[in-house]
Picture 1 (cartoon, rainbow, N blue to C red):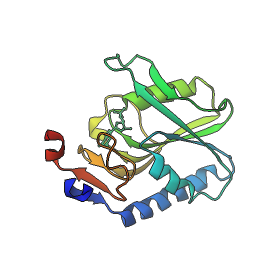
Picture 2: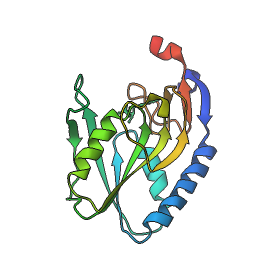
Picture 3: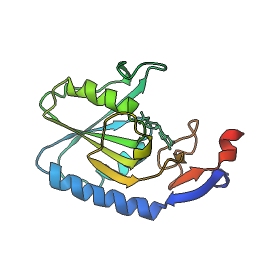
Length: 179
Ligand code: 5GP
């Protein structure tokens, strides 16, 4: 069973629910009259995004993107967009939703690409932030939890595409990747 691979639960289902609700409160204050475009970054954000938007009670539209950095690319390298937005974002208030901000490599490039499309505003909402790991000058505007440098899974986050369906966020036992 998946549970046997988890060393420690960092955020229970109840804790996640509480914090997501609080974040939604912040977003309601900032976006209630803006009809934003909420953009989920696949695949890790899908659970967070689904919970978050159900606590937003104002008009908004949704879209998704998938991106990766080119392997071995310099930080100046372009982001590889595997799935792009359906519509032009010029003049729109765009809120990017991501599972975790780690080194910031992928997100900083994605943000630069989206800024070049001239949105009215572009903000970043992440469930988890690992500031100790950052190599790029990027910060999130909304953060669920700040965590230390540990590899976490669940609530959308994977290890080799598994564990995304765990309802909580936990630290994976090292024996799982040491195999
Ligand atoms: P960055 O470009 O910020 O280094 O990488 C962000 C991506 O790396 C996240 O979207 C996520 O896919 C992956 N990632 C970084 N840290 C973790 C972690 O602790 N657990 C999991 N499952 N993925 C992580």
